[in-house]
Image (cartoon, rainbow, N blue to C red):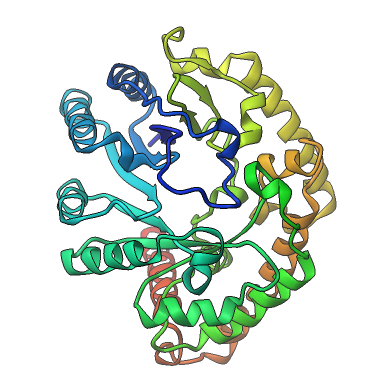
Length: 378
């Protein structure tokens, strides 16, 4: 099955002004991607792919409004019925606009929202905490499956205490280190060694937290270690597997700022996915990424897991064809530690009941898959 992930940057507008926002350079323009452009984009994708995951993004995507999103779902449903292509929806939001109507909408259309929320530090760089907490309560009451994404913006961010905060609210989360785009360019960079050490300390606590919640980075690394393809985008070969459309119809690889240096074309002027993949922007991005990955593959035995890290992060640090130092160090250090711990758990036959519920679920899932594969070989 051919699958593609698309990031729909509905609008650059936002009702918050987070200090580290990578969208700051857009000046939060109010334009909204037209439904006509959205429909054409989705239609072209259904001609090449069997499965599409739509990630609604911004700015703040909910500013597009209820009527817009309802009509977008009608477009998707029409394409499902006429092409047989599977379309699923995720959404990244600051959460401040979520009310009962949006909760019912997410439930009806099986959305998997992610809320950008920095936990105990939310007022420091983001604000809107009371509204976000209300949204979390509404989604929990409404039975909507969601997660949170917290930005580790400075050295004062306490990963362990913030994890405990999310766990107390029964909310799965992830911790994303700040990257130097937009507003973050004026902020101090994180120290890679401290970030990695803090993440390792968090993992060691998380692993045996019997009342704990999932942390997406840990889940991804553990799944890879156990042989299941479950990657975050920074550790995947994303070129050709991701596309992002902006409000003006311009198409890039993803929604991060550096990718605008490699335009794939405008939806108004392309007639197929092949047009995008034969563009100069696609070619140059692919060539640079392959050069970086070839170097990584030749020098590091972790390449099958990291895939040369993120192209955007490489460009932030100066060159598409060179591995980004921060994420390279962080990945090697954290992944190696987690792999050692996971292998030790398997070797020692640690009871699943001693582990974090998320860890327990991953192990059951992965070993069930291996068991099924062995049965098929018989």
